[in-house]
Image (cartoon, rainbow, N blue to C red; front, side, top):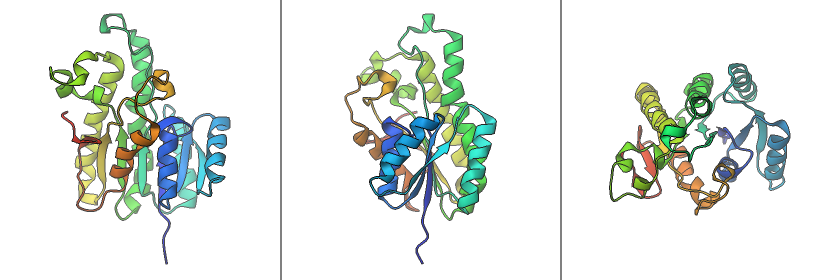
Length: 242
């Protein structure tokens, strides 16, 4: 008997998240499309179901404890375990201002989604992830979170100085390692993915990569076999410096 695998993708009603949900569903996963906005979430899920994919909307606001707890209960009521969790939800608020001009309120709001959100979601779904034979967690990070690349004079990131957004992804990378170290004995692999500068609402569609290209590294990390890496930070070309 074939057991259907399940996945939760946060922030998945559009952009990279929606493409990740679509790709996992085409691979045979039952996908929970996480979105805080009911109308957008249901429309996105319905469009993917129209393609013959097993995708359903999951009300999920990563900044609210109650919303995340209810979402975990909803998934648990239909699935005995969760095979893949992709923490994709993210924001970038007035991110291009120089560090000396960035507002603390904007940085706090950015951290609430990009840092505390993945912690909140991972902790809530952990019982279901532990019930899976070999769960995978992917944190959707950014190359702007790499301190090594920021200090490398030969890196494209030398021109980028996004204090609020970039540091939130640096923090997310540290969170990735922390969860990976704890969960490795249970067979769970936790990695961070850098999709690249992708044309999405986040950057006013100025990115040069497509969502299809961006989703590739996330899918690769979400479907690692037993010999795959753990506690790593990757883009399409391989490992990135922390």
